[in-house]
Image (cartoon, rainbow, N blue to C red; front, side):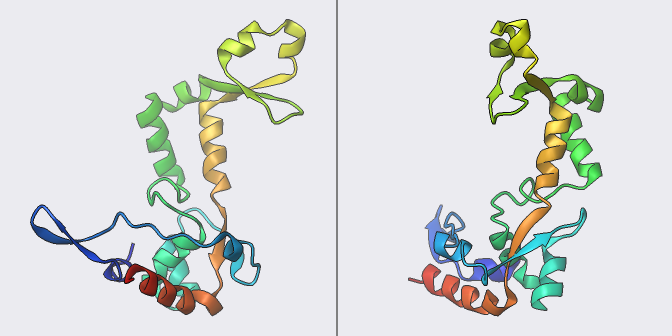
Length: 173
């Protein structure tokens, strides 16, 4: 995240030193999120970085925070789509290996309804009811979650400077 973003945050005294209060969090108002002229749909590509998108869209790579803001990114490491290499490293760290993740069932999903159950509940079902559920493996789940992050929204360039000024004003109140 760009240094410029944090320049608007107020100073606080922490352990007898002046520091930026990075615990503050700003969010778009729900009405703003629902206004189609403010947010633009975006399909990301693996490996695209927020600063690259900011440079292309806003002509200012320091607006990378605005890209993350529009995409509602809180955790810069795991809310942004991981590359295949980083995704596999994450899976290996969490499960020990890709094959283990591919064979680990994390839950079962109903085939026609939006219902998820754990293994203990699945084991209590009759054989006939079990046929209505599909096992979801850890690797497939993580990959699907990562791919879902490719569909995002961006703040329209028409509103970028307005939101930048509003954030600065709010943080300096």
